[in-house]
Amino acid sequence: MNIGIYIYDQAEVLDFSGPFEVFTTASRVSSDKPFAVYLIAEKEGPVTARAGYRVIPDYTIATHPPLDVLVIVGGVHTDEMHKARVKTWISSQVAQVSLIATVCTGVFILASAQPDLLNRVTTHWEDQEDLQTTFPHLEVIKDVRWVDERRVVSSGGISAGIDMSLYLVSRLHSLELAEKTARQMEYRWEKNP
Image (cartoon, rainbow, N blue to C red; front, side, top):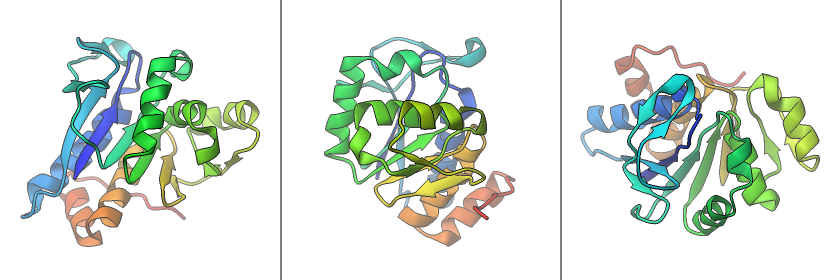
């Protein structure tokens, strides 16, 4: 299963590193190697995430292999929300992938590209009011780690993306693999209340 994680300048480091670690660790500890994970950016060259953390994406939005799952991460997302090329690409992926996940403010980017796709969502606690104001048709759920609307799964901020990714491993593969992955990472998986 191909998982593409969309990153951009000023993306939150743990928003993409956390899910990347979860899915790659799951493949490492599983005999059937269920996930191939790729970092994808709008264009070639390094991406400078928060605090100057430089990352070389595996692919661009024009060159990546077919995806099964798209993860859109958060960070300083306002420019990404208005990039026509990125929004067009996200819309094309919505038509192709089986699942879309957002971490933190990545939900703003998805909502800008595909507003009718979303109903119930969550994001970082600090951005929930802004999300509700910007997209009044959305039901913004508070005090949860993630919201699963079957086709779209959104998570709260930063470390909640790890919890959501472990949940996705359980959903896409098995609870056993998700728990084995959390143990391998020495991570205390916080599930929804």
